[in-house]
Image (cartoon, rainbow, N blue to C red):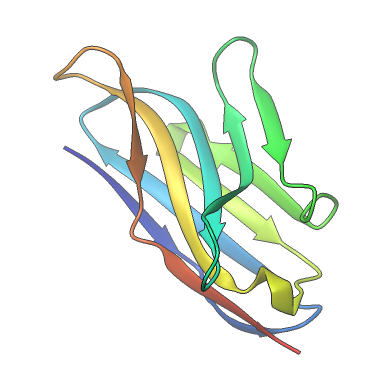
Length: 123
């Protein structure tokens, strides 16, 4: 089994900062990619930021967060972070951690999701 446990959400005023953390645990052989998605009420889940560890690696950000959010990882801890600065009310959403993981007990790599953490930005 694989678990993704998120932390760091909360309530912050516009212009403030938060850091989200997501730690993966379980029978992990390798992690191909990790990232963050968010879903606001009445809207579809959307990619916020993600990086891949395959094919030379790459990092992607949603246009709406470029220059304000930074994704980083700690491979030794199977952990991904999302540093969020200059937060805006429109950043309010449930943030979900996602990881594409290869486990020891079945072939192939599969996506896993965290339970979500609420981020609320007040104006």
